[in-house]
Image (cartoon, rainbow, N blue to C red; front, side):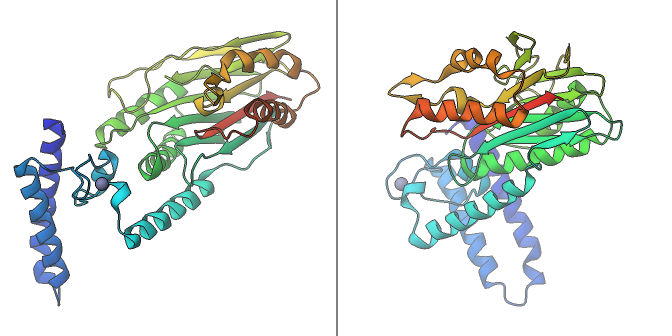
Length: 325
Ligand SMILES: [Zn+2]
């Protein structure tokens, strides 16, 4: 394991140890506390012996994101006891429920904008996120993002980002400032191997549309007979605390729309043949006029399912359409 990460774990364990020792006197029956202290000591011994983060059963590496969540674990995912497996499944189910509760209502009409999304985790929890928030000044802020990694750690990061974005949006800041602050807060408050790509946009009553893109797959803007993609305007969130983000400005007329997606959609593949951005882009010009946001989404998903046949997408898939109505 990397020297720096080991040092982090060691400091974290020493910190927990001293906290535990300070609370001993508060307990009527401190036996469980002594057990825990023993486990902390053993973990520290493993660090000194150079075997920390190695599964006691198979000698393989323990998943780093699991160690970050619980530095006392001693086996890899494959070698959990039955009880540990059940506990993990229960945790996942809970995390999945929390995530579903964080999703916005679907098929919304917000002023003269329609917003529809499709959100489909590959497992019980997802690293994708999707949100739409009407602001007090009458504009609509929308977000689609994708946290690196899988499982509980990605889903927890997604929940934290959701909370951060909601608090920052209430400050009435331009979207690139929201991204900049979310990135700083995220980098400074976490020891995490995860990062997130995301698009944040603000659409106003008059059809003006601002976009700020943190290393995310280029969204497509669909205007009269014209489809074009918009490139990233900054790095993913959670990589560098000093990242800055530009804003790209557009104007959408009635029936124009923007399509956002996560890479699970375009990178889904059959026998090594990827769905790809081009296949997606080629369908968009036909979808403009009489199609509602909902109908656009359904058509794209139908075509995607037809392409995949019996194959399931291996990754979380999120697709969202914002359309001026
Ligand atoms: Zn193992």
